[in-house]
Length: 402
Image (tube, rainbow, N blue to C red; front, side, top):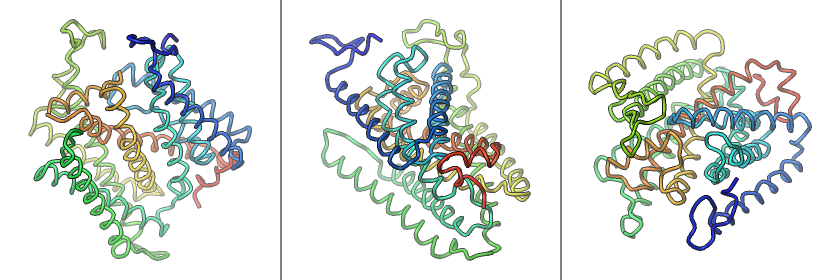
């Protein structure tokens, strides 16, 4: 708890700078404001308050495990998404904010310091978006719902923007130099261009190939195909994140930065598990293809294809979280937060990217995957809960399939 003291002149640790104190005070004020808004929206019933306490414990427990294992993911927003889905966006936002504040005070991995508290606004936005997507039916849509067309077009727009970003990076380069105003303007301009391509693709596809009608036979076919493609992409991305030549496992050398034996996993060297390309790329692609075939067969039975809207909600939540977190990671912590994602930031730094670019690239790598997995876990939990339990909460009916 020593870090709660304010730094005096010349001191740096363990303490917080005055500007950081002001930031943390603003977060506390935000927590109070969210509590007032959630109360006025009638979302803070007794059942919701009980769920929030459990959700905060879930967030801290899973988050501490991922920090201790140095995983390149977070998984500390499962409880936040659950509350957002069952009790609305304001309760979800308050849960996320309080989770990070409480976690920072506890002597557990990721806690006992201000680092986690600085990301409380990101956690609040995750809760807001969970409530937003729940209100739009991601946890309840059936495979014949015409609203599926909107999720399909949104996914296609994101894919188009991703392809555009890769092309721009390869042909022009996305450089961001705080000292070069011209580079900043070019970075912003290219970012806007990529966003326009994504939005334009989504808009056109929504009014053409994904303009679905009631009882349209294409709806289920499109949804099954999208579910299989998304599942394959998710598994391929996780495999590349872990096993690529420059992936996470390639950074677990068994040595600490100073050259001594690392206490993590007893000093185990896991670099041998990183697969060299093209063999690794072929193996990971084959695994994704086999999974896609299996998912097609699985999604044709019952309502299993309903996972696709859930993944779209999680992926977009991750994108927004990455945009908000990157400036905090780079500006406040210099790219080093003490978690497993530091290895990815360091990896991107070795590729010649700046601290901000590395933090942003790490966010775009980890956050969408992380939130997609979190949404999937929450969807599985909601599916297992009886309808009577879900409808105990103010927005629980939004998770019950029509």
